[in-house]
Image (cartoon, rainbow, N blue to C red; front, top):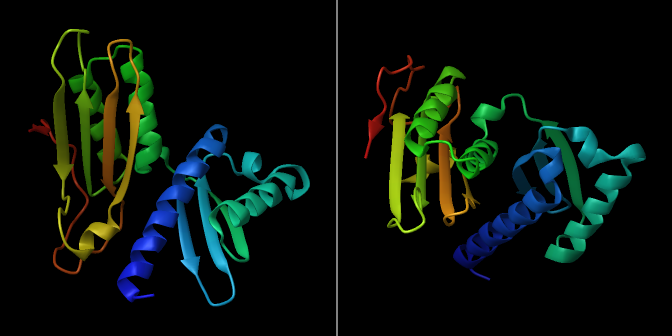
Length: 207
């Protein structure tokens, strides 16, 4: 197997594991997963709001989850650890799900994105971007997209790996809405740019 093929397959496996965990651990507030392979074990770190729901009484739940991942994805000797999320406003998947819930309740999309971006920056992020697209208003209206961003957000190159990213969807009564959230967490060091903490902008640019 070539290095390129191995890299692609590893990325696909990680994406599929993340989707699986997002469904299985939704009540635990699943945010993201880090996977590190070694010659002996595969370390899987789960970031969640409620670690107790993942671990279970006497570790029963996490043992069952470990066995399920092993069989479903063909991972040898997976070792799962659970980390509690310290700040949900710096976790893209949790932010995206929050946006989805509010869109389904009929909250104005533009105001929602602006207030969410402000909250992300208030919590120390160095940059954030939110994209939504679909039937944003009335049932017969055309699909449209809104992109709002603030701070530093790399678009290309290896530095994009330092950006946390997640996607989900909202399902209001007039049609599905895709949601993408990208966040540069506090303390991120870029090799080509000195990015400092941001003050809260008076206006957030809209594209």
